[in-house]
Amino acid sequence: METPAQTFLTDRKRANMYGSAHTGTTQHWRVTISSLALLIVVPLFLFTFGAILGAPYEEVVAYYTRPFPALVAAATFAIGWWHYAKGTQVLLTDYARGMTLKLLLALSHIVSFAAALACLYALARLAL
Image (cartoon, rainbow, N blue to C red; front, side, top):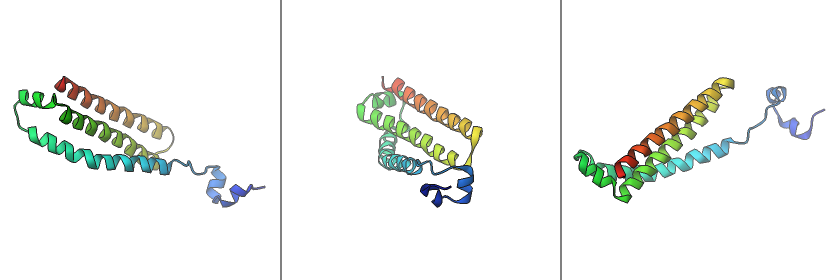
């Protein structure tokens, strides 16, 4: 006997007993919000980075000891790599299944967090 909730399931979902994970909207909004944040910080980063592009090393170090360029670069790196992690998570959940999905998700998160850490470490070494 079917419950009222099961009457709206397709035959395949009824056979698999899978329903919606109820996370698609949340994942979509996370990626949308981070892309909107990138729309703000990437032009700021290009403006601040372009001002010092091609300068000698000593000038670059002096430039990034100022708080505004350092904070803009740090925000760009952090938001960009977070956006990458969440974007690849959405992509992988659409196209991979089972253990392959788990391994690829772990790998993509490790890559994104390691790259973000490397970027922020390099910026901290430059600014401090």
